[in-house]
Image 1 (spheres, rainbow, N blue to C red):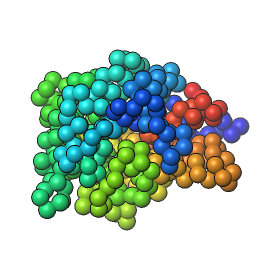
Image 2 (image 1 turned 45 degrees about the vertical axis):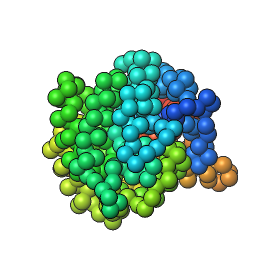
Image 3 (image 1 turned 90 degrees about the vertical axis):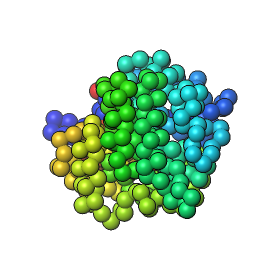
Image 4 (image 1 turned 30 degrees about the vertical axis):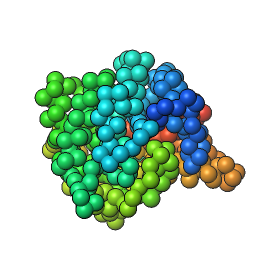
Length: 312
Ligand code: PBG
């Protein structure tokens, strides 16, 4: 009876698995603050992407960690840079069985940990960064990505990327826009995941957790610039924002169940204080109930395997 009248479901096809790949690794490296998540080698990344495709997940989101970081994040634009190499490897492996998505951002590649290049006074240079995002997106498309996901919250990033993709013949590559992204403490474990030590904070370009009207303005800008899917991030502390975005757009809405949301459940479960799989399923259901069509979650594979309701 409960199944018959259930209003919301979470299906594998609606889940996207974020995957980290680090340059120069010979063994996968566990991420201490995210039990069960690793920095992959190219080989284990390929295997993880195959598992994701076989499990029927909607896609994988790739994050690259270069061996050497510098002020301009030059590893992001090198043809043999880790993310470009990883996209080629994964798309050769999964073909069109699973969408290959890429994080278009510089924070994994810069030594200061900011999402863009800096002006001499140390603030992020919005427009200079747009050029680099546009070049990154074209490289990812050429390497075989189906979807590019600009996550740096620079003004104009979706428009700059759309123009560059179209001008280079990649009219069929979709943009998953991190439209609404808050300056959040819940990204904490992600810093370890991408071996980043951020200098300062991101409050000059990420949103104030107190604001929802601002989220709707960010949404409208990204829609006008050509976003194909819009994302709200984080998810759990922003369910009302997901609902407001859902009501304000006809585009598909994604939500990012971020590292800190994953780690707090995992940490409590490790203590025996909470039942991990049930709690994770409840979290994902709440994000879908709030109005997200798709969810980026580190639990994508475990949930698909362990929770009967999640099997398609
Ligand atoms: C930026 C990016 C971040 C995350 C995804 N893309 C970090 C940030 O914006 O500070 C965080 C994801 C997570 O915490 O799981 N490249």
